[in-house]
Every structure is written in C-alpha cells, then in structure tokens.
Amino acid sequence: MKKISALLLAAVLSMGLLTACGDSETAAEAGNEAAQAEDTQAQDDVAAESTQTDAEVEADAEADVAGAETAALADGVLTVGTNAEFPPFEYVDDNGEPDGFDIALIKAIGEKLGVEVEVENMEFASLVSSIGSKIDVAIAGMTVTEERQQSVDFSDAYYEAVQYVILPEGSEIATAQDLEGKTIGVQLGTTGDFIATDDIADTTVQQYNKGVDAVNDLINGRVDCVIIDKNPALVFASKFEGQLVALDGAQFDFGTEEYAIALPKGDADLAEKINAALAEIKADGTFDELVQTYIEGE
Ligand code: ARG
Image (cartoon, rainbow, N blue to C red):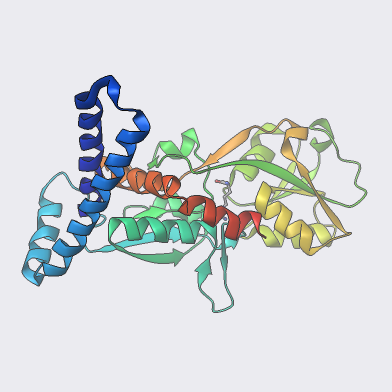
C-alpha cells in the first residue's frame, strides 16, 4: 500500500513539475525528474519500512480494514485461485507447485503490493464463485465476459487471446460451417465451451475438467476436435506432433478475447491497487520478461 501511494505522489509531483516548468522543459526531462522523485521516494520507503515497529505494522493493518481500503490485503496475504491445467499460463511444475506466466505475474503484483501470494489450485469452473470466500482473486487465463461480470469485476486486461481448434492431422474441418454437427471437446466452463455449446449448430459437446483430457480423447477418436485457447492449444498439439494440428480460430470466425484478473465485485480499492501494480510491471519491463520466459521462449 505504501509503495502505491508513493507512486501516486511521484505522479502528482511530475504533473506539478510539468505545469510549473512550462514550455521550456521537455516531457522527457520532466519524466526524468519524476523518475528521480520516485527513486528517492522508494528509498525513503525502504528506510521507513525497516524502522516500523510491530505495533505500527498492526495499526496500519487495522486502519486498512476500517477505512475504504480493501480487506483482501489486510492480512498481508493475497489468496489467489487458479486452475493449473493451462500451459503456459499455469501448470503444475516438477515439484508439484503451480507455476507459469500467470503465477509469476501475480507474484510480481504481490511483491509490488507488499503482500505474500498464496496460490490455490482448483477447478476452473469453481473459480468465479470462490472469489470473496475461498480466494481473494483469480488468475487463470480468464477471459473477460459479460456473464462473469455479473458476479465479479476484472482488472485491466493483460493478454489478448483467441480460441484455436485442435484437429487430427488430415482432418477435413477447415471452416466454421465444417464444425456444425461435430463432437467437440472443451474444458468445462471456458469460453471454448461457450462457443461450442452456444455458437455452433447441432454440436455434441464433451466437457472435461482438464483441457488435456479433451486432447487425449481427440487422440483416441472420441471427439472430432478440441476448442481451447491459442497458447495451450499450441502446447498440447506439440505434444502429439505429426498426429494433431492447431488452427487459428480466426479461420472459424472466432473473435479475440482478453485475459484479466478476476476480482471481488465492488472492491474499487483492490482493483485500483492491482491495476497500478500491473501498470508498473508493464512499464518497468518485468511484464515483457515474463512473456519471454513463459510464452515466447517455450
Ligand atoms: N480463456 C478461457 C476462459 O476464460 C479459458 C481459461 C482456462 N483457464 C485455465 N486455467 N484452465 O474461459
């Protein structure tokens, strides 16, 4: 919380500098001064933090609960729900721990907010309804949809996606019309599920708790294709090279989607803090590094 207000302060300062200095100063110069102000502020913060007594820390935490501030961070822990069946965004690593782009991103956000991040791995279809009870927020390559917005808020979007169609090599399915009447495998409660169920005529939709199970049934000939987000589709199809191909959903008239963090409805303070942290992570290059590590460097 402290760091964010420091940043706000730096932003306000830099705006002041801009107007105070008038035309003679370039925006780049003003930016530099703002960055310096931020630096000094950050150093002050480190000093302030290390001299804070336990009592002060506790008083701070209490003030958070009492004010308009979010309760989600008051205990110093951000509990994050995910479904670690969606590489490269989230998967279970060799030590049995959730890892992936989203996990690294939410941990970076937690660091900016000065809270610990605890990840709860659960079924994708349970995430939205668990926000505000079992979990504070959810990060799971989750697409912003109007339907979900009835029950949760979303952070600013952080990634653009599209559904892909995974097919057996040599399949004749190539257009939206070819999908009509087909048996389609999807992960339950995902946008791929909604497209297969609501937007394509006469389909039989097989819903799986894990996308990879749908892909295994495609290999076994139990479904004609699988509809799933681009990056997981590429990961899954590459595991069966020579047997499966993954086609861009644009070819089937599927629209683009945006991933965002799902938040408790109406918690403006938490949304503001998470968005500010996300903006910082984008501005300081951390975001691009994570894309490189987890998505583009696959
Ligand atoms: N983007 C799709 C959706 O929001 C699929 C997300 C699935 N994510 C996961 N971690 N299993 O419905």
